Length: 296
Image 1 (spheres, rainbow, N blue to C red):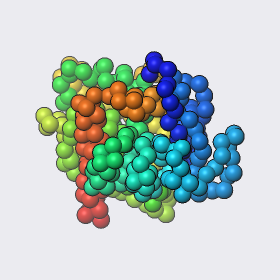
Image 2: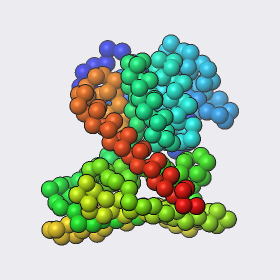
Image 3: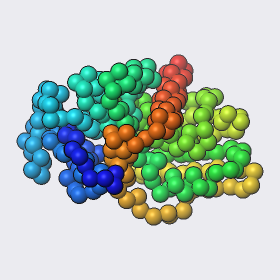
């Protein structure tokens, strides 16, 4: 991206919640990747008119406009699949916040559609751009895992809007897969008290070398957003991540990756490896959901 942009890709942002607002801010600010992009407008179910001088446009106009070449899908997870399909069918490139879909089959179908249309389909994974993940990646390299656990706590989240906990929490699963390779499901349980807005999902996984990994998502009122991890290796243990600095501009870093894809700067090998990981994680999330639901 050190080259001067020969042209700019027109962008529309769909959904202006937390992620969508950050995306709009990054698109408006002078960054190397933003120089290749031109924010044309945003789509929202709410009647907002404009935000900081950026005009709201209808979904129909965004789909039909020749000016719009790229869609950033930042809406609720339950709506991602439909939006991706509509924009790909309209011949637009798509960046979508994770999870791209709430089923493996839908993700595979949309990837095939993107390939047929010759368009970039990029699923954001800012958790892999965090300082904590960079620290962990360095710490685990070359070590033999004996066992590990990852617990994530947070406030309540609506399943109808954000999907089953294995999907809404897929960034934690992506961490584990990115650190330890492809995983298999051993068992999973879901404890729910809907009247208290409380849920706890406990998942037992294992690595290809049969090392056990447990992943727990616990959400409810009063629970602070926190991550606790414990990894035991033959050569020692790692208990939680020290303070490794502030995560700066992680959405912007993700945008840089997306623009590199638009410019054809990613190799086929890199794209295939990323797609394989994403589909593996979505497949595991679906397997976990089916396992939990079969035991209700």
